[in-house]
Amino acid sequence: MEFDLIELIRTRCAVQRADVRLGIGDDAALLAPPAGHELAVSTDTLVGGVHFPFATSAHDLGWKALAVNLSDLAAMGATPAWSLLALTLPEATREFVAEFIDGYAELAAQHGVALVGGDTTRGPLAIGVTVHGFVAPGRALRRDGAQAGDLVFVTGTLGDAAAGLRCLDRRDTRAQALFNAPPDTRETLVARLNRPTPRVAAGAALRDVASACIDVSDGLLADLGHIAERSGVGIEIDAGALPASSALLTLFEREERLVLQATGGDDYELAFCVPPARAGEVQRDLARIGCGATRIGRVVAGERVRLFDGDGSELVPERSGWDHFA
Ligand code: ADP
Ligand code: MG
Image 1: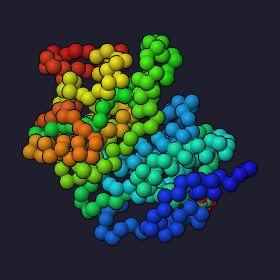
Image 2: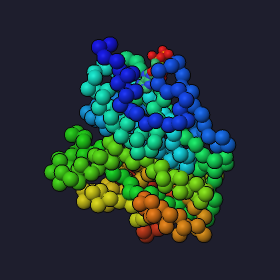
Image 3: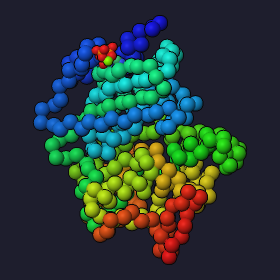
Image 4: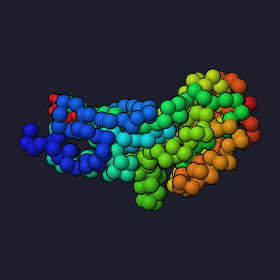
């Protein structure tokens, strides 16, 4: 290799932590977890052409690879600490790796996450990241604690990332209209796709209050389905309550917007359940840290996630739009 790739990575991603006794450079990292805490560990891989368009910039990729992993820790209410990076590259150019690691380091610095090791191999572009965080014993947010009667909330807005992907897709029949949209609006949505914000502080604030929590990566309905299944409950969502950004409202009509919000995915917002008595407190706490949450539904006895229109009819997502059921 014509340059020292690992040295480049090590020097550009420079968060230092006292609990990293030995970082990049040996056969394994040596880490000292805080006494009396549980370690939350998660890993996620992004494959080129599957999880991101090949045209995505290296900087955005570095950010996103870490962001989707920090989002998993946020959904557990864990405080991020360490990460590992497995890079598979068709060819390692200095420009690509430097830009990639700058994007990664920018987000890592925001959360004080040290890069303590990894692996580098040649092959089709893929990025695997593993993250470690801390949480006090028994206090992690899980998917299995929702109870009938709880209220369901989601942070931020939904559907923006999926809309951003639509803005990039030149084969999309609506893409021409999207290309003519105000550049700011398009850029806002594409940025939500490429540079998601992991809701780490929100996850920490929910730790002692939420009965269940998940990050929205596959789409709201699919991910709430995991809470329903693990908790043994049903969930009813009010379509009219789903939060939308002004960019989404500008570019998409209601039906199309609903599909993006309910099934779009890549939002990396937190969806969570809270006993009604604590709902006001949660909203105040989240507003204080600058991450608003919207009430979107409730937990009921049952086993399915159902989406309801304002007139009480159930909406069922179809590839081409929505079927209405009485
Ligand atoms: P080994 O052959 O012992 O696995 P490597 O040559 O793969 O060693 O890696 C050398 C050191 O560099 C190790 O500490 C490893 O964790 C680190 N490393 C390798 N690739 C990366 C990467 N993409 N990001 C961060 N650290 C890396
Ligand atoms: Mg190795």
